[in-house]
Each structure stands twice: as structure tokens, then as C-alpha cells.
Length: 215
Length: 181
Image (tube, rainbow over the protein chains, first blue to last red):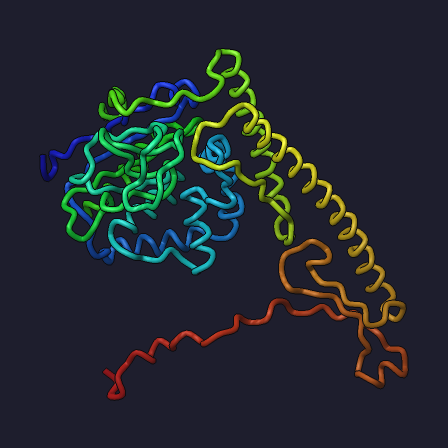
């Protein structure tokens, strides 16, 4: 599949007990037929406009807006402290406050930043040729590890996985060799839906990122 | 957009075997669901308090984590719920204490303005009255030592925050080459 014939978004799989335990949890993914590269002038301009629109008041009010709040709550539900390990949108908001603007890095990073800030939903990317879609969310079993990371993961750790292995922690570090590199030709965009976040917001995040990547 | 509406979830892979958390009974699950709702409500209240506390600094907002990401047991969820409730109570008490102090300082500013000579050299900042910015009220003598000797006191209101420090950004024409091109 190539060019304009790219597929739409897909729902990932979810381990049975997670579906029962966390209603509303889901993984949405979208494959884009291109890798990263240098950011375009239009993308940098868009990032600049976004920086101007996103000031201190927005950052302070972020945590009682419905979508960022839902992610904070979910972090608490899975044992993370969102004031220590920040949700994707809060991480970007903090960076905006520290540096005075959203910094342009690469086309993919800029696309993920734009999508996350515009929608409130964190989007991450994998090299579509180095993971076997569809991805899903499941707890690990004894003996599993994240490639490139020392030690085994404690059993029951929630991970984003393909059919063979964990490719990242849920809202955490990724396995080495599965991310997008300058050589990547296809990108798998992934967004996690949690309870309280409408599916349409997650879809929007993916399409926003894909739109920036496609130019 | 049909692709937005017609989703079917992919099936999980057959292996590796999934891990069943402790306490999988319906009662246990319902208890965890209730605790998650309570955590959500407390998190909302903490978020509202966070926004209303601005610009006050030095408040502790962290609750701590039990370690994740993973499915938590009922006991762990209870611990998070209790920690959130305790943090909320502590922060509310601290904010109430600060609000009392700020109210007292606002009264002091009013008295300073009414009778500057009775409040010699007293300085109250915006932070003391719970407002953003660097402004301060300062009771000081008019005309320096002469005013001090003659008892001519007044309250001066500072003009605000100092200008940002650090190197000045380059002027628009600084990028031009020496020959003006």
C-alpha cells in the first residue's frame, strides 16, 4: 500500500483482564507511508503559532481539562505518579514553559508535538517495518524484557506489544531498535485511549500527526 | 468517515499467557472500580486546587506512586486514594493558612496607605498578598533623610518586575554583513 491508498486507523488488541479492569482502555494505530526527516518551514511555523497560543494560563489549567485529567487519573490507576512521570501533554507543556516555545527537532517529533498539544492525547511512533502490527496492550509474564534495557520486567508490567515482544512500556520507555530512525520508510503512529477520553479525540490525534508527516 | 465508525478490535496473540491479577472475583473488581472512581474524583479536586492556588509557590502536590505501570491490587488502590485524600486535606489547610496571612497583609497595606508614618520602612510584596507579579508597597520618607527628620512618610508602589536578565537578542539588522547586504 502506498501514496494516497494508506489505510485508516486500526484498533489494537487488549488482554482480556485489562478490558475488564479498565473499561475505555484502547490502543489506536495508523500507518503512514513515510519516515521522519527534516522539519519543513510550514511545520516550524505551525509549532511557533502553537507556542504563542499555549501560554502559562493554559499550562496551569491543563490538569482540570477533561482529556489531560483523564490521563492523569489513568496514571494513578496504574501506579504512576503524574507529577513525577508526566503525561505526554504535560511533559510538552513543561518543555514549552522552560524553553519559551515548542522546539523543532525533526518532522516526526514536530508532528507528535503538534498532535499531542492540539488534542491532549499522547502519540508515539514506531518503525512500522520493525514491529508486527497490530500492536496491543498486555501485562508481561515472567522472563520478559524490553530490548536494549537491562534486566527483566517485573511480571504484570503493562506494555505495548506486538505478537512477539514488548515494544514499549505503557506510557514509558521504548525497546531499542523499534523506534523511527532516519532510515525508516514507514511509521506506525500509536495513541492510547483511556477511560474518559472519546475515541474521536484519539483518532484526531493520529490524523493530525499523520497530516503533518505527509505534509 | 466510515473508518472512524467501523472499528473491530484485533484479537490478542495466543501467547504469551496473560497474567491474572490477585483478587479477580466480581466483588474485588467492583471494589477496585469504586476505588478508581474515588481516585478520579480526588484527582479532579486536587487539579482544581492546583489551578486556584496559582501563583502561590512552595506547596507540595506530589502524592507518590506505588510503582507501575501495572494493574494494582485493592490495597494499593486504597493506599493511593488515602494518599490523595491526605494531600488534598494538607494542601487545603496550608492554603487556608496562607489566605489568612494574605488577608492580614492586605489589611496592613490599607493601614500603611492611610498612615505611612505609623508603618515606617514596612514593605509588603505581591507575594505576601497572594497575587502574581513583583510589585511591592514600601513605606519610606519623601526626599530621603530630610523627609525622615521632618516625618514626611509615604507609601511607594514599585513599578513591577525587573526586565529579563541575560544577553539581549540580536537587533534585526545585526545579521546583515558589514557591506549592508
